[in-house]
Amino acid sequence: MKSLKAVTSQIILFTFSFAVFGQAYQDLDKPNSWEIHNRKVSFDNGVIHLDNNPGDGILWLKGSDFQNGTIELDIKGKNQPGASFVGVAFNGKNHSIYDAIYFRPFNFSNPDKKEHMVQYIAMPHLNWKRLRDGHPGKYETSIAPAPNPNNWFHVKLKINYPRVEVYVNHSETPTFTVNEQINVSGHGKIGLWVGENSEGWFKNISIKENNMDPFTHILVDVGHDQVFWNDPKSMNIENEKIGRVYMMTEELYKTSKEINAVVDYAKEEINSDILTDKDILFIHIPKKGYTENEVKAIHEFIDKGGSLFIVMDSDYWSSLGETNVNEIIAPYGIQYGDAIPDKLPGGHTIKGEIHDNPLKISYHEARKVLGGKPFCYGDELGKGYPFGTYTTTKKGGKIVVMGEAMVSLYMSSWEGVDDYQCQEFMQDVFNWLK
Image (tube, rainbow, N blue to C red; front, side, top):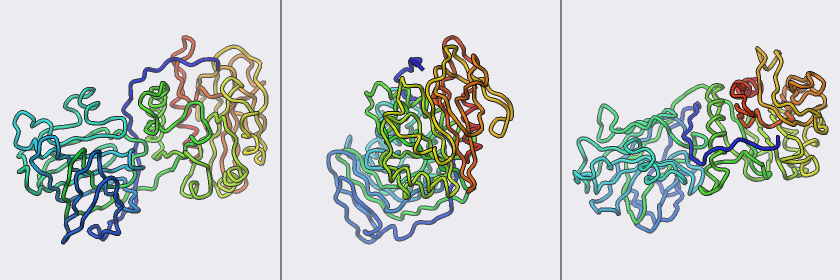
């Protein structure tokens, strides 16, 4: 694969679905239940107060990993223009990656600003200004009737991914609805949030998660200098690759939605702890080698029934000399070989355990994959050189090994061909692996 089609740097909004287990959080008015970021906090007779300070402040609920359910609480800001932003953060990964619903009490009694009373943001890339400029009126709205800007008001968030409904002061219909959450994995920490130079008061907090069916956990490795895949929210907004990464991420979440999965990222060294609750490990064109401990952890994961989807390419993007991927797959009778000697773009799958029907898939300059059960071939040389194989281990683990990267980058168009079935391919592969 010598070059790739350009992708615009526009950030794409993406969605996928997931499921959760039932839980009600307790002791929400106790100091040891929370951890603070960029504020001083006080607890007084059930009221939590965050002081004002430059920058955003968050009081994170320790141990929370909220997905679908309801969050209810009473909130109070003040009628101070430009200095009272109060709300709830969710989908939190760290102090900079999270979503939030927040209120501007100083606009509650300002008829000229009524459309800016309640706001959704998806940090760090999509703050209020980018969402207002790019999607006017979609991620903020008015409240009717508007609360008193100096009084307590009641808020209920009903979250059923990708939808968030906001109810204010016990309204029977949603005051504000976000139909598209914009986030990485659709689950994470919950926090009490205050914005720039703002203080806020919170009380009567109730958090309940819904019971839903179990879901598949996909872990995407981005900690080994991957050429393409990354966590888009961890990237600088000016990064030239961010448009491509968001495009691929949007497609991955379409795949995840179809197989009822959630996606998270491994940004550091892979170990048994990070793999504990995961079902599928996705490794795509790493350029850095895996440590002996990482290889051991991946083998233990597979030997306990976990699944691996690993992708390399010809020497253009990465080489077998840069990364020791063959050490990962060797115990399962599969190895990467040298480049396939063909020049004609285009590939296909065969009908079998993974695909009910053959698929037309993008392909150009791949690496041979030796061993396993072949299921992907280039169009020029037929079945002489498979570039995709799979196997099932004796202990129930599943492995898919690809020697070509375009299809797993969702490259549906290439050199004048616009009907490659990459989304269908990825859905079938992940569905077989889960």
